[in-house]
Length: 633
Image (cartoon, rainbow, N blue to C red; front, side, top):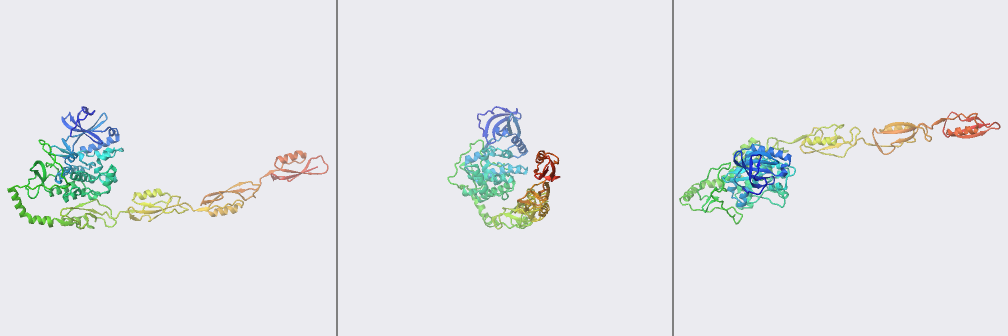
């Protein structure tokens, strides 16, 4: 795994403690170096973040939190995290150094593995994930690059929790996406969420790749691969490698179900199923032609096996002793599960044949008849009843996530996988889901004087309901835009997710406005008030409109609403002015004064006299323009 490459960090001592010796690998988020912990005198793997990540304070903080979570995870199949630090902007993790190679390296070298080999690697991987899931930690990036195969036969899983820090960063690089999309669960693609079942899916994809030599999906872009994860079922490995045992096909199919509820609920459950399948397969033994090649044993071969450890500590089939170079094996010429060669073993073979003959009857009964069963129906049973029925039917029962059901009462089974009457082996697993009853929501109340449509839509959403809004209706009492009524009525319980008809007020109905200009005030006021308007009055003099009649109306056309004000300008008649008293004045002066005051003048000349005003008519208060007659003598 070591590859010394020219690098500015090589030779530096980070944090006054870790002397960088060689670069091991470079990934989308960090570069990994072999380093010497000068304080404890031990070799460690130093993971140094790329600068684009190290400059993001939010990412670094999240990365440190996830690293601390991973550091608390102690398990023999987990790469231990020793330390975390920051040296002049070089953010790093100090981790356990595993001398060996990655699962990716093994797949590239061997092309594909036989089922026994693949399961022997998968078991310790699942043991590591199971410990993480029990601690509330989801890996989120299970892939061959994160599975380390030590030279001493150990299997280690790396990068726990670090994918979450990268996934939450706003600008995830394309390199990171392309490197992990082949193993993303459908719910990570469509909803951006991950839980232990997402790790189970990725482990199932990794098992498919170990068995076939390639992931189930490919595409020109990462998006196209992600789309296939979300919309296609993973094919069984036997579709690529004919002869793959059916129980191995079933294991891959169950782990990679698109519906998370159809998968094992966490890595521990997947591990238990993997152990059962592995034990059902022929064990591997050394090929006589090559001491490092392992093949499945047959009924004609006597084999001594090491104890099967769930945590994966038995020496796996892929492990090669340090003293011998790994044998290069070309893949089979055709996509087919390789059957082992028969060998003659002399006395041992004879003993085996005798033992097989003695047990043939019992084995035939077990494999031919008593091994098979059908899935019983657990529908509408309680969990206790279902468990009792499962026990008597020789199947394992797993209780999935409860959910609401509109057809099955609470605390009863409303769904099961596989379906009733499905053929399966005894000891197979059936998953049931318990009903929580009908999921009902109560139609919320509202205040017509206060509740707007937006307010009520928010109240509906809070209880899982939506709205349909019919045509608004006029209302004299409910303000425009406020809720005036709902159907079903307030307080009714209806199915969660249903819609409620919400009627909104259009405000008061429109009232035609009639123009009463020229009419008397009393007539206009009565008509407008009866129609619903609020009448106000102003007064002005008018030379053309009789006193008490309407000079003008505002507004005087169109439509109005109840209570809307309308102003009537009412005539006070013509304005009058005092007629100047010009008696005794010369005719010329009197005429000038009256015209200046706005009056017209007529001269009535009497016989004789000096030409002075004897009398004027009319007098007192007169409208401007009135004709004033001057009597002159």
